[in-house]
Image (cartoon, rainbow, N blue to C red):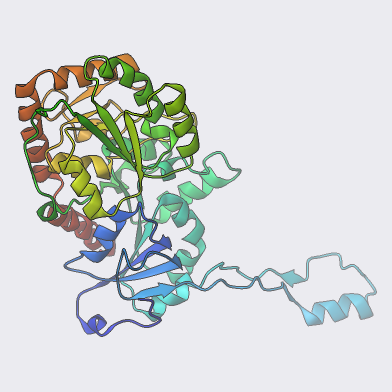
Length: 403
């Protein structure tokens, strides 16, 4: 539901946080929704440029930003008259117009009108975009980085300097993983401002089952992700023939969509893997959890891209682990912060199909290891990534920012 005014709940004495979003919300932004919709000690208002998928992500109130026109420079009438008609100096020997401050959106007005206590800019490049309005507003705000936004636009002229201004003016800078915090530190963010902001997982909604070898040999590997370069999908296609040689009835199920889908389909056909790879598209949360229950191993062989895009801690991987799926992944980004190789999954170097295949074979040929890794995967996620715990951590950041 869209709203232009706070709901009746805003009469509460709890402090108000504003979640600033470019788009509320793209289908892959499930983890953002969990934060936005589950605050306990704070009320929340969403302020967004665009509103999408409200049926998938119901929330109230949501306020649309309004684009602002760029005003013409303000001229000085007296100086204009003086130079043009008295001294006959035209054009004038000095600047006689004044540029007016330009705010692309009415964010500052909305923050003030709704009595916001602290603002949360989702994604670093959006904080850069909203920085003039946040300055105009003058209240405390935080920004969270989630992965690609650490390096997004970093090669654009002037952007690194504007990002450093964000670091300087934000009360706190949040990151999904320690590896992202390290990258932010390298970009110039003061270490004393950095805070971890892990993905919250609604564990009560995820059923656990111990994974055992299928009696009919129908092994199911699964990956849920956007079809983009850093997800390692093409490395998996190179590894699969090595695994299928020992497990001829194995199938790899890919849940998601993305810009590399057509190329991925071409590579599947070129490798003769049509009977072993199934693309099922984007699934609802309930459908995805159902697919997890039908699977035996979760794959996530992420890799650094040419543009230095890296993972935080993949949300889909944590959900899969909570359901009892052992993970075979890479030593990439924030993945080692969630997976201890040999305990709740197996980690291999990036872009190494041979080692990826070897890890899969090691797990599929050892029923005791599969069972133990399945149990450990669920235990470790439930101990560290529960929704309530992560919401408490986020609200602690809000309280700190308001001091």
